[in-house]
Length: 381
Image (cartoon, rainbow, N blue to C red):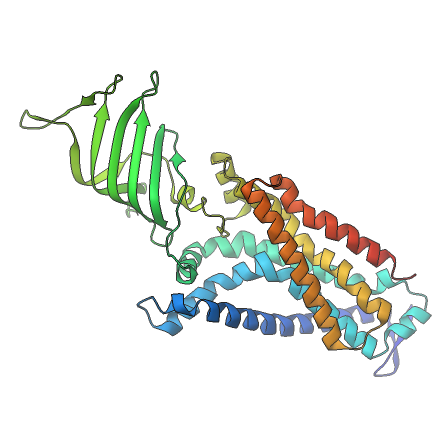
């Protein structure tokens, strides 16, 4: 089937029109990506300027490191679907302005077929989001940890207590993910039969050591260790000179545990740099952290926003045949913002136990998806 497009006035095969539509979409996507990411960086940078100034490094280096680590997070966690919608609305408005829809509809081509290229690009953008999240972001862990520390009001996080497979309970008052260093550490273990305290170790800090040869390990610094019998009495430590001490003071002590840095980092609700496999493994290790389950489901649910926002946005352009680019982009911004706000509210409710974790991730898809299908189905009416 051939169609008539203007300008220029000529007949084109339908497949050629699809290629034209995809080309226009990609051009619009790159323009919108540059504009929106730049605006997002400016707004985020200004809001965090006081935090950037606290660091000893030159301000341009701090800003560059922050955004080089955070832009992949912006794209995969927030802006990817909005960019898809912006590019589609921009392209659709241009088509309306050029009156290309008139001959298409006159030729009897259904709108779903006309708009098929947009949904093909939505599939491409969803795949790109998943690819970046699963391959690029995990390889930038250290850069993202450092960037996150630049942007926080406090560099440290306050992790929850960790229970390892050796029956140790490890409490760290504050932890710096980019340095893999914890402050004010307490490690305790209990007797298997009575459940009474067996050992208690307190240290000023905890450091993750990665030697050139051998396995990495946790090193306790500047602390003391005490041990107790089943009935709660202190058990002394024998000394080389034949004396005993009720507590063992140390400058450095290797901690025997299978706890890993991610066990402390995953206590932070904002952790976003784990791949799906790492996230699943971490959730299996620490299933009480509900925000990890929310993130697991969101890895599948959020990329679908590329399709859902198209279902919501395109009907407004197709119904009114709007020729105003500003109006189309404004509608895209309103829809994308509303979807993100609803998604973040549901995620927060899932994190704090107000919603089932699976429902909190999929509710935006179900609600806005049903609304989008209804609007899209009514375009021809």
